[in-house]
Image (spheres, one colour):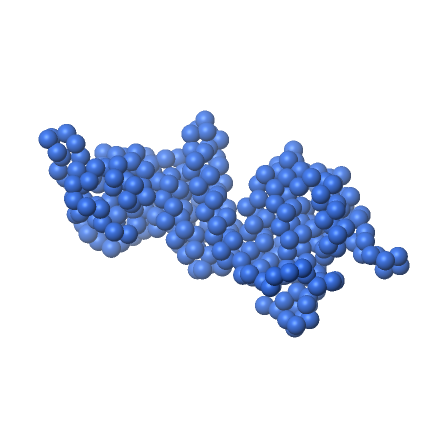
Length: 336
């Protein structure tokens, strides 16, 4: 990232660093992280040294360091504060996506800092930081742990901030969701093109009708790709007729139906898919249906259905349903 030219306005610096102008004003007011000189005593002008300090502030807060501590370290020219642990003091966060809103499950300090970092980068609308933090979390912890302990809690916190603030932070949740989706698709290796060979065990992924939340299914698709298990992703709000045709045409080993809310969980559809059969008479096959997501909570799975408790359990079940991984040239589930 290049240093902006001397004498730039706050707006120009914000655009260059990928930081919201309101965040710059907040940091200046609270922590003294701002331009030293002013033109004609009024207009704020940033020197290269001013920009270097705020860039370090961005780096530290993106890594999960509380803003007040990051500001002290940035002013001192330190590469990192002595301690990055602990929660931010009340009022230190520039917006409600705070450390406290995602620290629901006891985890290591690294995971907590990464959650905070994602939330703060999303609040700043800092696309570069989001890409870097997501890539680092997945590489460091692996997909399942990164999703369950870092990414999903950060998404839930952003959603709660939107719901409790009168839709003020919808852009924060949308930006974070976009970058999470991008990171998940980047990590999925590309398999050979063309249709799957006949009788290849594979997984069909779909949201139930009226369900728009696809990110958990995208995380599952990325996990299946890591395991070498073929999958077809149909995405949000799949109509029942389209799902029925897809199942009969492709004969999947498993169908994952995602429902975020009980209002969208479609039990008749799940029973229909589980009862659907295909193939020649005397050798007909049926698929196993995985009821995924909180919308199915409190319901006992019917015949031919499973209810996994999370991403890790869903991947284990799907790997079992695909059977032992054969040699790559056998055209079935690829070996790891």
